[in-house]
Amino acid sequence: MQNIKAGDCTIIVPAYNEEKRIKPFLESLSSFKGTIIFVCDGTDRTPDVIRNFSERISDKFPEIICLEYPERLGKGGGITAGILNSETQYVGFTDADGSTSESEMIRLFSYLSDYDCAIGSRWMKGSDVVVKQPFSRRVQSRLFNIAIRLILNIRFSDTQCGAKVFRRNALNDVLPDMKTKGFEYDAELLWRLTKKGYSIKEVPIVWENREDTSVGRADGAGMIIRLLKMRLGISP
Image: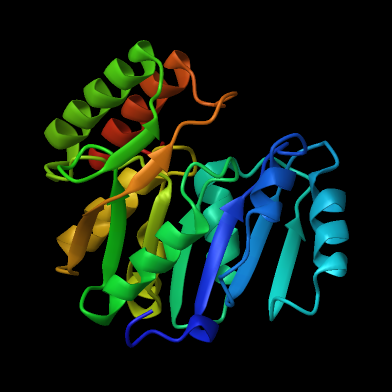
């Protein structure tokens, strides 16, 4: 990572009931030498799988942290918990399904030498979507992006790609203002960073769709409603 030391980076992984998918994600790790924080707020054996893996490869990684919560935090709530429990200068988050590879996250961190935030995009020219989402999911994603542009007046092509990295000072500045805790968290975070003038680089990314997504049509509608409430100053 150009000008960015791996030891100064933390990746946060929200892991709600990811027992069936987390092992392939863990086994794919090979190059990242920073801290990885898994935030587990479900009811299955996800924490056990992570701990067993961590014990087995403890000589390869500086630190793997597994946080457990008895109540559902939501994606955004899980990310916030991870941020508050991290200590490095650079912090990012990604999805537990492994749709964004370790190497792509490392590449995103390299942009923080010049920007306050870097986000992966599946919709920019130059992106490589190895396995595409079903057509209905792609339509839903684009409609959601249009709604975000109208509600928040931000012009990113893909606010929901689960690959984002940040400088610590930028996160510290906006985190106290965050209102949402669900899948819409990404959009609010980018909106608040933009409002405060932080530089955000959107980067074409290599991305692979994974099955068993936990986001449905009802979630998409709920995300839009919560963002609209947040924008109007009504508690989401």
